[in-house]
Amino acid sequence: MPASRPLVALLHDRLVRAAPSSHARLIESVSARRPLTGVRTVLPVLRRTRGRGGGSWIHVRLPGRPNGHSGWIRARQTRAASTVWRLAIDISARRVTVYRRGHVKRRFPAVVGKASTPTPRGLFFVEEALALSPTAPGNPFALATSARSNVLQEFEGGPGQIALHGTEGLSGVPGTAASHGCVRVATSAITWLARRIGSGVPLTIRE
Image (cartoon, rainbow, N blue to C red; front, side, top):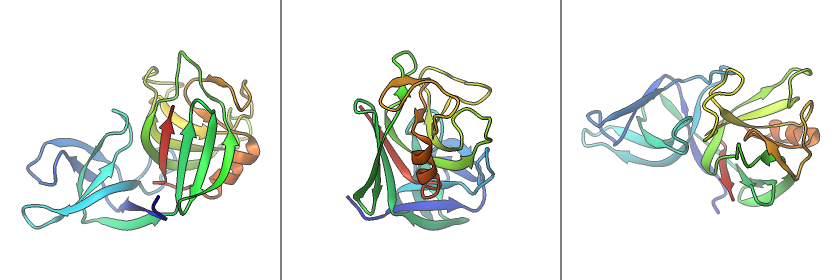
């Protein structure tokens, strides 16, 4: 397991192509800022290459639907970055494992999605970390991820985005399957995570 993972920060909005060419099919546009907090968008890098025209291109994992999709962006107006952190959520074990430099740092029991609204499986990343108000369900913090519910197209006005957050004001205890798809951990656990895990950190959700 690699000690660090390559990331890229977007300095401006980027067009995403299906191949490393300005003539390739346009997939979407990715904003340079995340919608909830306005922090700079940081994406996991899958590979880099040179296009036929000589420009540099980066294959990146993308947020939103369809889950786990990826595409190519031009390297210009981006900044290279990296992270030593990685998250893994085991649905069957109902556990969050935190890796630092390829080694297990912490493990936390978690609440995962119930059978009717399961937590989606796949390869994702953390889009942004945010502090929640003391009255918000799941406070005090949330890590909003690139995953989206496969059942709920929207939830409470949002796009059905999957988050890792606290348990305050919510039913269910860590080690159970009771959520609408989000992953909940104890207050002490989400506080520990929010102080360390930032945008772009890879996330694997497996059975």
